[in-house]
Image 1 (cartoon, helix red, strand yellow):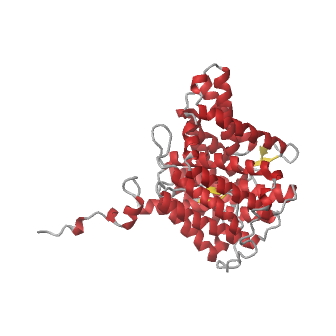
Image 2: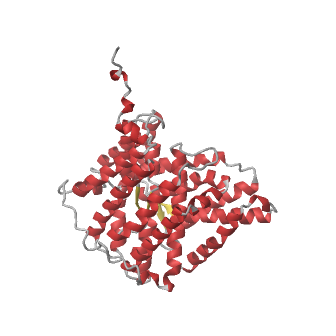
Image 3: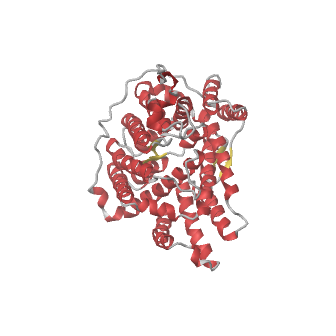
Length: 447
């Protein structure tokens, strides 16, 4: 009898079985490229997060190491527990709240800020464990779910334009204004943008990755990319921030509004990212829901609860994961590849820090603009369905927060349907959700 062992497909290896690559129409090469692309898109956070936390008094070197640790552990959890192409790491919003708002403006110790972040993560975990987060997610109207990608795409594109220096915030009015398109950073970003378009149009694998690398190299003669003195560095000790979480101090009743702002913003940001990136990766069902959505939620909640213990608040599935999804990532192997890249940064941090924001900006702009295609699925001719989605997009722009945009879109959906007399289309769960949403917006006005 002939031995058929040689005829077994390569996809039958451990990686195929563990991550179901063939089932999701992917391959090892595609997932690795997607993971590296996602890593490069999120690498700027290795600079931004420690900088924000250091503004509140935290040791910057320790925060850098803590940031890498969170990226690695949380992304590995997402890879092996949820098998999804989401890169998990610290979000900018939470770091701003701890480092700038609480420590900088309110005079609250960053240790207490980490305590508030930890309690928020614990609440996330409990809600997820009891299935309430999935209930809330499933109660979100179909039109809002369909419009999520456009809302988050706007946020991503603006982030890219600002990183490129093409759009600035007016220091007097805080309104958006055009930057200097002829500055070195803007020229590097624009060149990288058109290189990315050229590669994507020709369907060259890893096009966005190559565009980022090209822009990084181009930035050297322009003075945008700063070459490090050494490409290898010893990681900073995490001791100055390790375990510095004031859980008891965070229970002060006066900090309740901050806890709710923290919780609500991260809740809707996580939900929006999960659905939007999941849609980009083709992982949603016909109703816009993700099967087993509790798994990524559990990973997020664990990361959010444990991150503060190494000095890092608000770990969540990052919107930069959309770069990985755009590059073809469909499984947890994407998150695994990204985690390995972040792990290498413990020794090669200077390399990651060398990549300028202007080099990753083109990827964010291109991906964000592509996500606007989600509006095509929304029935804009139906006034009561379309208007809340457009309001969600506008609030995202005005508040510079897609978490706030989603919350605002839900509130407007309830109000518009109610005013239009279409009460039966508003689920009971949405009426219940409206109460904390109103409170959330009231805290934003105060703070």
